[in-house]
Image (cartoon, rainbow, N blue to C red; front, side, top):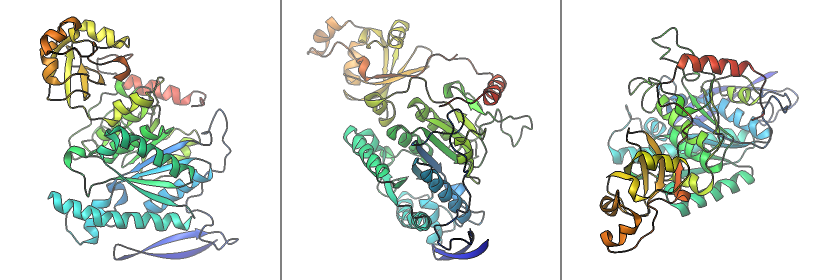
Length: 441
């Protein structure tokens, strides 16, 4: 083997990386830095070919301790993505880092806090971020595409399906789409907010089989492993809604923007039928091992009854603008997949128009589901608790009998207990599942 020094110029800096190449082939497209597993896929073990895989990596994982780009992590991630492509899978990469790389390019001492500055810095950083990925993917002969999304692209039905058709065509052409939120032009009301959630939405949109959330820890634990030596990693979470754990304070790797958002992303993705894995960013090769059937990271199993089509857009594309509280009879009816009528509504919260997305709660404050309302909040406040025959006299017009038609209503899963989950039992159950003969999923 010979070692070739590859000097890469990025963000005004020269960064050296070592690349190992085969003596039998001097092409830069030769042997990868991280050799992928050569094991054949088996029906009872490794992953089948032809899956769609969404990978998300965050700013902290892309940055070194001194604030510069962690070139080795980027290189390893690109190698894994290309290995997946060689195996016949479709790959989408969701990446953060535009603001942090932009700050480095402009010589800023800290991440900007003023909105206009942050947007400008993101514009600078996005160019450099895409150049970084494009250069490394080009070494492997893999074409990439930049896709910038906002909540508006997912929330408006026409945009939603146009985005889906674009992703499908890019994947058909063998391209790796590289996705980020469009921070430069987004306003707060149209922001997804974090790229974990964005990755979950993308996985749901394209109906991916896998979502990998790469982070600074190797999975979800029963407690904070930094302070509790008895904390155990959960190998398998059968239902994400059963997972009720202390995620720690905001600002830590367990807080807002950390593990909490990853679990929310897992909730979105698994509801759409996507198996979600939280694993260590500094070892992207764990993605290959997971897909070969190894027990790595924490795996969230997909829903047995995933939401599809129009209801998937309602569940994940829209941001609820209000909520209603239902009585017990209405709760039982919607759980049986029946339409919702005004007679079962106890109270109305928020200011929304007709055809808006609203959240449904029971009398104990538990979320029941989400749906598109046929009536505005003002009208619902007048007809709540009333029979449909009274609508005309109260409102002055005769609208639909249903407040939310069952075709426009998406329920959360109800096979779980509302009480706190025994995490130690879940950990033991997950361990026994992981040791059982592998299923073809």
